[in-house]
Length: 202
View 1 (cartoon, rainbow, N blue to C red):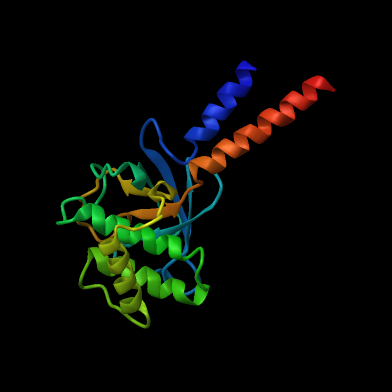
View 2: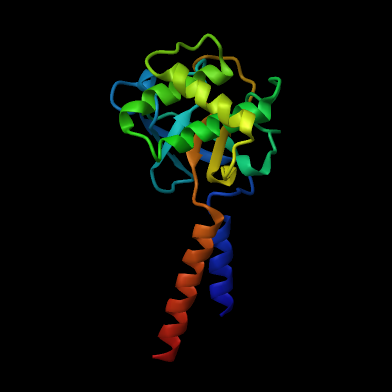
């Protein structure tokens, strides 16, 4: 039973916190290279491949690049280690970016590039706005004006290079990813508990 409690505790921590900086390995872009936007692909601490979205138009990065990053769960509203935390209204800007990332779950992949351009533009007004990017930016700002009803920002994880304010264009990007909802982890833990209990009875 003690092992089960430890296992459920570890599951609850998955995707929500790290004791220290995470090790990021940037694996590659979606077809067409970085201007094509979401998804990029990376691993965190040697784990499974994640789809990630860059929110940083200025910084570059190439497949194979590795770096250390601090992890932030957007639901905590703690922006202390984030790259753009000094911008006016930074929390709202990050919430807009997080809302846009969540739209990739319910929107055709043909829109993902424009969604990513809208995210880039949120933090850097020099980023271009092709296609439907202005529409997506308007939608994010509308949601912000309404207070993002029903949005669970605990679903958004952000990996920020430990040198968060570095101004070298060749250095790593800040990356957003969708993480499991805490409720999903609880259900998974409950399922494991049921399986282990059943095994003991048999």
